[in-house]
Length: 318
Image (tube, one colour):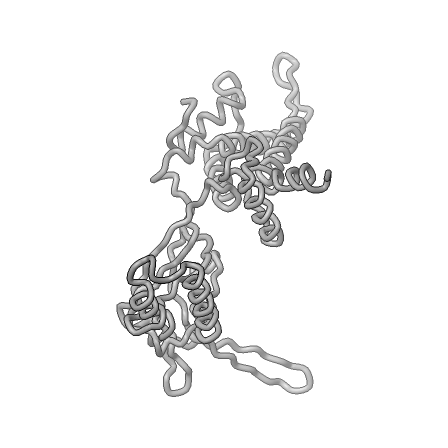
């Protein structure tokens, strides 16, 4: 099919692009399966269509609280001990304790932006908070207070709330599938929910249109072509009946050039900018979209390449 909707259809499509069934593609099925997995991993980790922003809700359990409150000694629940040994001068062993203040996240989660905390402060949370009383007494109908004064008061209260109730620190690594919460677990309540603002990869088995992605089809075709050439390199110079000579090195080199072009296209078109570019990138993006200068790019496909060109086109040229 020209529009593959499954793993096998994607493989057959890529082989047809390489000449099958007219030509025999000398790549084993096991090798093709590995290449499909590599292509999907690259697609999920680099392509903006490979992931989706979602919100996951997790209920805190008593076991989570016990592990988070573990302090070692008389309360060793959830304590992990790591030792280090030194043999310089005298032999000595050093022990380090770490509590298991983490929750396990699904393997499909590859990035976490933030954890939404419930607003329980006396300034902005609950019926007796300042924010609630301000809205109740001074804004019971819209003409009773100027919106500018209300907005300035809310900003001031937010500053106080930020100073007194700082954001809790979290740590996450997608290779661990663990979200570490560096919080005071003594204040956590059983059955309390936390909400994860995270990025989750699209499972192609659930969303079959992933197999029909234009980038994925080209990238997997180039990977199979490179593997094909690599398999034939050892037969370099071997004459086949009719005087035909296999040229695995040429196939391999052509595939490497194709992959270089495809990866450059990924970096320039489909990939979100690196962290050190996010500040000026989104600043330029907001400026140009506020001026209605779209420049033939949709908002979801606006990338660092377009930002650089827009910067040089409208700012550096003036």
